[in-house]
Image 1 (cartoon, helix red, strand yellow):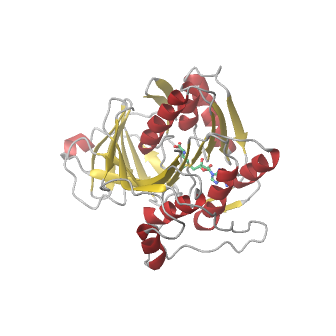
Image 2 (image 1 turned 45 degrees about the horizontal axis):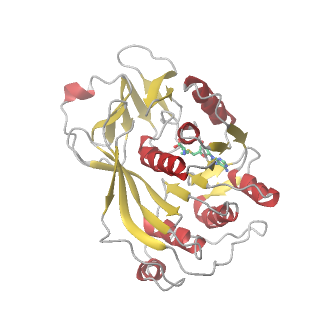
Length: 354
Ligand SMILES: C[S@@+](CC[C@H](N)C(=O)[O-])C[C@H]1O[C@@H](n2cnc3c(N)ncnc32)[C@H](O)[C@@H]1O
């Protein structure tokens, strides 16, 4: 699942400036559109809102569109009429896709070759069910990304155990780790089935993987075995992401690269509530305070939220004020194999060290 591509539509990186002085930051603050209408301040006394960091804002680069291209392990074959047809390894899979408001480009016979079809509720966490039109399939099947074997998985929430659009972030992170030519520590928050953790470990990093779901941690460990990377240093931790980072700050543990891929709403193992709009500014700020003196990057992805990438861009630039570097923000998209249309999957904003 390697081929990825980066498209920058900004004319050139904008230089850094004093906090609050850049035009895009002003625009993001001035507009009160439905896109940022959901932003709320945290009311919780035990999770106070961090005060604004002082210093020059990092340079900015946006919009950056990171594309996953069709390849032999994964391809978006077609989409339209509220569905998408994808190839994951040996299987063709049909799932609901709310954004596919256009018509299908491939003929019915191509869609009828599907091995698995997810039907039912199209909500992010809605229940639904898998149907296997040709023959019954097991829960998992072999998949591969850039030489790393892992398992695809039919889950009850229509997910298949991997988010292929993340591959551009994985490539970028692996490049940073290899180029660093020194020991690199990676923290993967909301790590799910562990693909990013495996990519980081294979590239030579020492990895800490955190997820609230015991089941997801189990799947991630299984993937480590399938990938034959059990000799690599990965700590698998089942914990609330915010609590974990708070503790790491107190303990003085530090990381060079931090990945955050939080849901819009989630719960920690002890019922701790995660709410994207309330918690992201604080978590990003805490992540800044657990960086090593020579950090490499912090990568935030956001999906299923009503916001523009300008919102998370503003949070990330404010968070890394005074640290130099560049904040790049935009969308992660998957390019269709057939008609070449782009399917947007998520927003991202990443700080890259100078
Ligand atoms: C979309 S997945 C992340 C995908 C992953 N980055 C990848 O590319 O495979 C979101 C994950 O966040 C976890 N999660 C939800 N709430 C959490 C919390 N409060 N603390 C830690 N993890 C949480 C879920 O269990 C789920 O595995």
